[in-house]
Each structure stands twice: as structure tokens, then as C-alpha cells.
Image (tube, rainbow, N blue to C red; front, top):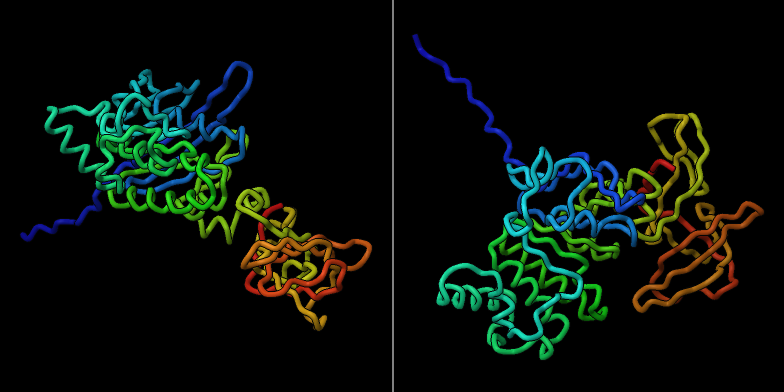
Length: 356
């Protein structure tokens, strides 16, 4: 008799980081509420939230600097917090990059990077040189922190975090103290380093543009609750709720009325599935609106309230005509209209319908 072997699907690899039902309060103030979050190995995730949303507390819980009141935290296949145990931070295999780099001022660049390394002196020296070359600071081993630029200090802090060969790197708003021009270049450099090393990383930030450009996935935190977790593109173009849409940048959220076909707003009628008893809004980002001079039939008449020149683009605030006028924000290139002038506004691209 011939035996037939049924192929089996190998078990899925455990997530690099998994939080289940995590809660944290400081005194009577609840900061983290029942957070469930799974982060895949090798990914770069941004935790995006406003000040006071709990994002830094969440990072510190993962690092082991704080302990949750309840819930479990798993790194790889290992429970590090919960189920009656709490692993010390130094045993979690986590590298941490704080907001202000927090370099030791009395140590050289090499001394800062080698701090906490194991191995012989020769091995530590070799590993330090390799790390500094990787972050683009080769040859600066003997300098002190005060002799470095802000961007260089952040790269030293990253090299120090990578020195222990961590399985996870946590970055707590590391670019906030840099000026805007330097911030973008350093951010790109750090992202490139993390990608090259393949280490699982979490960036905490309040900057929407930073989260969208830096991460593979964005977890959005509001009042200690994860309200959305998806790719930057999906969250920006198809947010589940109006709250998420606003958290990710300027959003025109238009009221709707139900029709046989779906939903109607000032720009027309759109197909829409979903519960009929739920408030639904049409989302159009500023770049999805176009200003016209000819007041074409497809355009909505509006008056220009304010123009903000921003270099390559201008942001134009308009209000639609009528007693129930709606405020809109339009992003436009070229010469902007005059304040007080009458313009037409057209929707371009595909709108998204989200819950109100």
C-alpha cells in the first residue's frame, strides 16, 4: 500500500512584539486602556499620537522601564511581562534611543557606543568601529558629544542601541530636537540603517509626516487606546473613522445624506455600503480638491477666506456659498487666488467614506 503524506503548513512565526490587554495607570489617571498590538519581525512601526496619548508610556512598558497593571507583553515567543513574571530591561534584548540622545558627556563617541558591550577589549573595539562605520561616523571615535552636531549625536545614540545586538530597537521621538532641515535627512539615514540591520523597530512620534514617511506600519494611539493599525497608505487614504482621518493630517470631512444609490454630499453622489443608522462622512484631502476660475457646472461656488503660501504649494481656505456654507481646505500649485475672490471647487480623485 502506498502511503500518502498530507503536506502540513508550518506554524506561523511568532510576532516580534505582542501586547494583549495591557492597562497602565499612574495613581487615579488611566494612561493605557486594554491595548492589543502585534508587530511583525523586521518591520518598522510608528506609534503616532498627540501629547498625552500614552505613546511614550507604551514604549516604556515594552522596554521594561514601567510595569503594566494588567495584560501581557511578549517578545518573540517569550512572555516578558505578565503571567506572574516581569523580565528586567537589560535581559529583554531591547535597544533604546531616547528623545535627547542622552549621551555620556565625559565619554568619547567610542566610549558611548561601547558602553554596555560584552566581550574582550579587542572585540569591543572592533564592534565599535564597525557600528560607527555603519552609521556614517567612522573616524569620529575620539570626539566628545559636545563636539558633534545634533544629527551626529542621534546617530551615536542609535549605534549605542545597536551595540548590544538587540532584537528590537525603540526610538522615543529622537528627531524632535533637530531643526527641520536636518530632521528629514537624519530620519532618512536612521531608517536606512534600521532597514539594513533588519532589526524590528518602533518609533514614537506626534508628527504625522514623520510617521507616514518613516514606518512600514502605523499604530495610532488616542487617549491610551489603539484606534487604528495599518500601512501608512491605507490609513491616509482609507481611514476607518473621522478621528483617524484628522490625526493623519488635514481632512475635508463632508456631511452626507442617504439616497437610493448611496450617499450624497456637495460634490455629488457616491456608492456606499454599510449600516444605514451610522453617521457617514465623505473624506477629501486638500490635494483632492481643485480650484477653477470658470465656475463650471461640476464645481461648487466658494469664496476665498485665506491663502497660506508654503513654497511649492499654497493652502487655500474657502467657504462654499449659501447660509449653510462649508469650510474647505484646498492645496494648489501655481498662483493662488486673491483673498475674497469667488472660485469654483471641484473634487478630483476617488473620495473615501468613513464613519463619523
